[in-house]
Length: 236
Ligand SMILES: *Cc1c(COP(=O)(O)O)cnc(C)c1O
Image 1 (tube, rainbow, N blue to C red):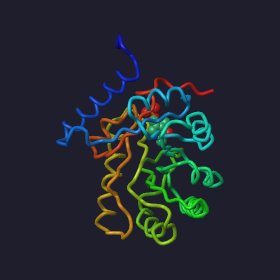
Image 2 (cartoon, rainbow, N blue to C red):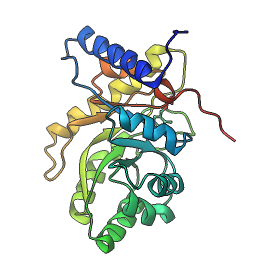
Image 3 (spheres, rainbow, N blue to C red):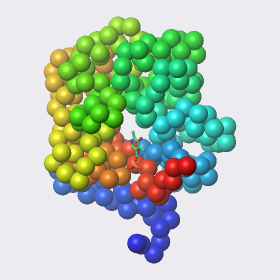
């Protein structure tokens, strides 16, 4: 345990580890974005992180985004939906989120499209891919990704596809974790070769507090970090 465990120290230590992982695989330091994940932490924690310069925050529940928007109306922050999004919550996400990283099915894409059209907004999306065989993980099967992207481009003009997202298997077996991240990058490379017009695939959102270094070694362009910034989460 360090003597100074303030948030700014934790973030500085985290950035040092992110940069070290980049350098290990010949990527430039500073080339990986850090998305703080504030789910379960209150508005004060977001305020503290915003004071360190963060302007985007990952959340997994639309109700919690709404509460924080109300509590933090004076802060210029944006909300990124990273958790499973029920179709009946598409309305809330279309109103409150600047980006959805958990787009994993056409029913949701269509629901977001309808609601965004009503709101007169566009949003960036990442397509969440299932790269592990764990039954609990959401995500589109990799083999369906190409057709999915073509349909989203055709039918959902308010959604701008910017890349892919995944969660690795939860395991102490680092090779198993690594193979999830590698699978996402390889899928992205194949999709790029397929030259699907109207989608960008430059972003790979993968890696959390426990596995971000492996994700960076495998090509993550952004990592989603909760507990390593905000501390341990306590679920009610
Ligand atoms: C909670 C969460 C994270 C961050 O998890 P930590 O282990 O706290 O870093 C990242 N991605 C998703 C999808 C999450 O739900």
